[in-house]
Image 1 (cartoon, helix red, strand yellow):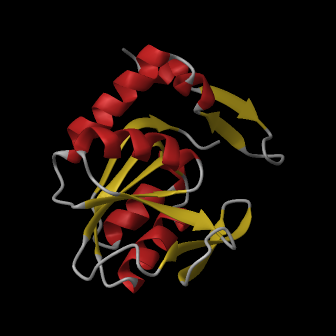
Image 2 (cartoon, rainbow, N blue to C red):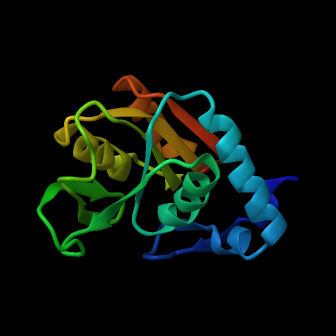
Length: 175
């Protein structure tokens, strides 16, 4: 199955000049979604990890399904002010603004190895922030798996240059 056929592209969203790759069309197709999750599970075999992390919100869709299949704990990396207990926080740049993500300080134990799953990588700002959160928690990033890589925006290359291992299911141009 060609998963690319299930990704919708929307021009000028969320602002002019952005070509948004919409995964809702993949998720609403049960066969495409199942194939996508199976591919992530297969690629996860390349990593040694004991926890799965994902960034709010679209990453949760994929990571929770993979967590269930692999019987691994799932840790949510949330937007600012969404978590009730003590948190680690990281501010970062997006391709169209700035944001903050947080994680409960007790989500990770020292020495945990965390596989980060997300729907898409563009410039890599969100992924780098996720890695910083995990490292603030005295844990290690086992690697990243993204459904979509916007290859011409350089995020995957930036993560690899920083020493992270990255897997992508699909490649699309960012613009």
